[in-house]
Image (cartoon, rainbow, N blue to C red):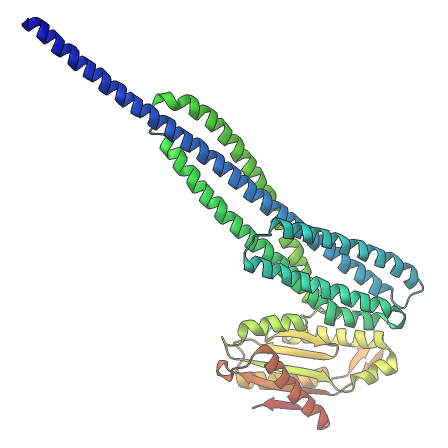
Amino acid sequence: MAKKGKAFDLSLRRDKTIRRVSRMYGILGVVIIFVTLINMLAQNFVYLQTRDTLERNLSSVQAVSNIQQNFDDVNENVLLLISSLGTPEIQRVAEEVVANITNDFANIDKYSEEYKTLNASSGDDLKRRFNHAEYAIAAYRRKINEVNQELGTLTHDSGMNIYNQELAPLQITAAEMLQATIEIGTKVGEEQTYRAKNIRGWAQGSLTILLVATIVFLFFIGRSQINSIVEIRQKEQELTEAGNRLTKSKKKLMDSAMTNILTGMKNRYALDESLSQLIGNAQFNIAVFDIDNFRMINDMYGYEFGDEYLATVAERLKEEYSEYAEMFNISGNEFCMVFYEHVSDLQAQQLSEQIRQGIGQPTMVANIPVQTTVSSSLYHYLPSDNLDVNTLLMKMDSALHAAKRDGGNRMYQIQ
């Protein structure tokens, strides 16, 4: 009886061990299945989220890139139209250019709607930047329509003035807002991709603690993951290439929009940008120079002669004073110098007077000597002056006009 009891007890313990092992393996099996299912769901979630994010960002970037390309085409056609003003071919060129511009704007409208559909749930900042770009493009379109109705009365010079003063700023604004749209959209996509990659990392890490029984599952999941990574990398590369193309296009546009075509100097828009960086951060001296009665030169010898005279004066200024100041040709016969930090106040005053007299020196243009007088204004800006760019330039213009009212050929220093 004792042996039977002992055998029964051993059998009972074995049964308990079997049940315990079975229970342990059962729990482990459930854990394996649970963790595997979680990993499968996480992997699928990561893949779908990352793929959708990149596809949406890529499509958005491509849409904005297409808008930029068509807008560049519009600008090129506008310049072509301006170059044809006053020529016998103006009628033919105008018909062809207007048709091209109409087609480009139709494409812009199509891609704008495509972008809005893709970003219907985007943030306020992204929508605001794209809306600003749309407003600038719409204003550009309205101005082109106005100019189209006045083609018969425009000359090449008046057309270029309209372009430089009204169309170019709108083009720059649209390009900047489109670039900002790309940057913000790309940043949002990168953040979402980063979060998705964290989830994927957690899922991969948890798989390493599973038993050998999960190897088969890991094999299929790993193969699926490799395919998703390859696809993601391909889309990331496409997104990067599209962003690089847009950046190069923006840089080319900015370089042309910030330079006076005639003199090669930076223009008024470049001056505004430069002053925006200086005002409130540093003290500096700024001088503005205006050729007195310049209109008489154009009236006497023609606009081409006047343009050549201005180009000659600009070259001389760049050769003699580029080491002392950043130079701008802010209007036809008006120049501005923002003196560098190493130039003292007294030296800036002396150089301003020297520049004023130097511009008025006799200049040979087409074997004709030209001599003029020049009025100017000089201002020593301090951060404590509490001025913005527009107010500062208005003070400069006011002093300059006062000098011209008092007979010209003088420099007024703003106190």
